[in-house]
Image 1 (tube, rainbow, N blue to C red):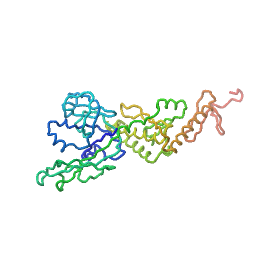
Image 2 (image 1 turned 135 degrees about the vertical axis):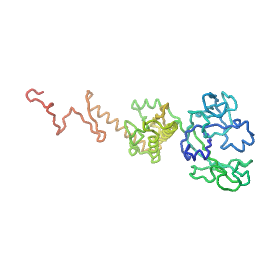
Image 3 (image 1 turned 90 degrees about the vertical axis):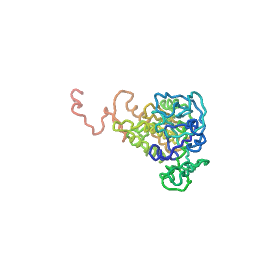
Length: 384
């Protein structure tokens, strides 16, 4: 499902939301603005002067929030729960149950939503620069307002520019009257992109893996190993043979995780934890696509309250070299396990394994040049 989300230029400028780009993962509290929210104002004026963004029809279930326990503007704070998302709505009256509403979704939640209200996560699939015609109202003074009778204009872009001509306050600086003002950007957010691809039952897949079947499980998590890929141990990016773009994004994700922790290794913010989860899910999905239908990618975020996610593609590998590299690693591990079992001869004992050389050292064997210590020397007379 695609949600058109309006983000004003000032919200990007103050750093609450990074400069958007296509492919970006956004996790943010979203609000639904409806005309009924401003019912005390002139509806015609409201339609022309304050409605930034693109109108959308939202179908969901309205759940009233306790107005006494949350800080919100409206007298009837309400959550609208749809399929895969939840939006905050200042309802004009007590509303509960199934609803269909026309309005604009925006991300300006500053002081307007209850603390801890759920975020919506999705991938930006396209975006449009939003502009509106402004005119001076007092003959060259500082009072500017949208020109009545002119609709917003939207221009497709691939990323939000660092410097946006005409952005910000309409009256800032000099300019002819009227002139176009960049008000912000509309992000088309694909919330379904964060869900695992439709696939066979991944529980069966992991069971087949454990039983020695053809499905292999790759785990994705950062743990100070200069990689986020794990089989029986960490897998280096050089050995994984993944695409350079995916490797770069994994490295950036690991770096951002460490930067999101304080000195006690705790999350600095809830938004940082949520972003870690969203990006990890996206990377797990991309990894599953590169490896193909013979693999399951497991991701269990460090974010409190998160659950394990399993990703498996229904398609053949998009990166055969990577799929073959992981198969070779799994085969080598199985061969090593069989060799260790054979070296033990079915008995009980202990051994040492050198992971770099692949050597298995059995202390019960005498190797050339190996000298027993005095306690271990045999008595030639007793044979002990």
